Image (cartoon, rainbow, N blue to C red; front, side, top):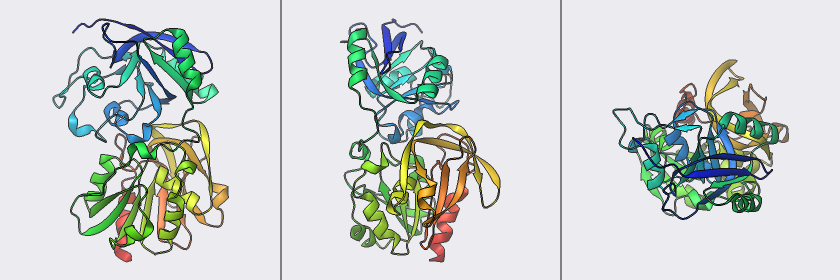
Length: 366
């Protein structure tokens, strides 16, 4: 398959420029000049690009895939983690010209066009990753506009710090997923389909908007409360920590993942901070302090919980072996626990799926 090549460029806020070619939306020579802007991050997973692109946690970000060949197995509708692509764009070394997978129903390039998401290929992603590792995730802009226009866009992009992106990804109306015997109320801060499927194996899941009050949650008489993943700065999700704090006092089992973990920490009076370039990948080693075993985990977060700020409120249960950051906790004096990584693993290894069984055990014990 052949396609026309339209030159494009990526400009980072620090002035670094990379030249490449446009892919996805706006790559046609007949299209108007394109500018995509956002916080540039990198993901180290070898596969799962479709799940990553449709993960609402990437709202506001441009994803760099460190794997050099992307798109070789195409896309398949059942693999979507949400109904749309929330990422601002995608950066790859080489976009596959052919797809080969019996499940595939479309190419990645066509998938991006359908979702009106732009991308840039032909970038030296190893060099870009080194820049981001040394300088940290930073705002940038790419597209087919002039370099000066892209530079201006990169300088005006504010990134994810100090921004509440939850309104862009949360459901506006409650809905039900699954039909299990237990009843779980799940806060949608950007919940993924794989999370819902894992919960739906044992529960009827009532998914509610991020701004739902504690009284409305308790009116549903839940066996458990789930705090989902989501994008952006946890300290900007105003109101959620107070709601979670109120729910912690009810004794109902609570489980948080990723942003849910961070919000639970804030509810306890803890603090969060931004990592230099975040954790984005499917092979991060985490030590379970209770069993002293190592789990290979799927991760996607830019912010982290300050474990020292929770010394009297929670017990650390998991630690990242790459940088010793907090990866899990259980709340002292409450029926609640959380992890920073993704046990549902969409994509990624299933080493940590046991955490859903722990959630069930806490609900059944209550």
